[in-house]
Image (cartoon, rainbow, N blue to C red):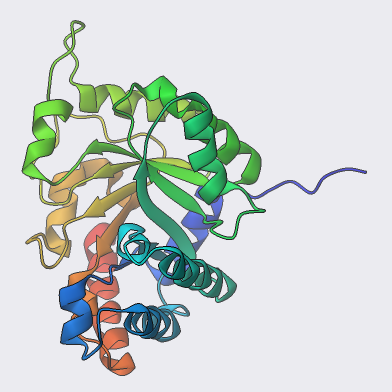
Length: 282
């Protein structure tokens, strides 16, 4: 019996971005945000928050990015809410990037990958954020499973937090920075993929001129920093240059602060999506 080929994440993401715009909305139910919605910082509040975001936006945004830590802090009941959130979002046609930033070696890395990238897992997502700072090769179990399951990875490369520079801008003996080295690995993973590879980088939208880095990795660039962190859609072409078409800008607080009103959430997401689409297609 011949297996049906799995459509790669990069292909599915490109189609979603073209159809819905490239906006990614974070699902970040931290205590202060739950409170601002009039919700308690408990399982009931977590569930109400997550369900509201998915129901309001799942038919219009390309990507959701739930932050696993905000669910994990509630233990097994929080994980159960995360499972339902992922399943409901994917059932509604929205891609899910699990923001868990996992990174380890050998069988432990393989277990992390199976948790989020195996179709048999209750937390099965379309892609996973990972940390390469035990060496890019430590990610191989996740890369291998992603290729088999048609999922993707977003590798921390040039993050928006100021502390990241001490590692990512450090210079190797060959003269390249660590961040540039990670981008090079991803370009190799995506070589020959069309219309876009499945192995992306996390690159902050707040970093300013990145022309010294080759961001053309033939893969998606997940870009936090739009909205509350200070970057705007208009900044994207200057930051990402020729690679701007593959940028997936993430907005969390800028959209979520408008809840719990579903219409206000949709209006905010639509505004960001329109601004981003105009900026990257100009």
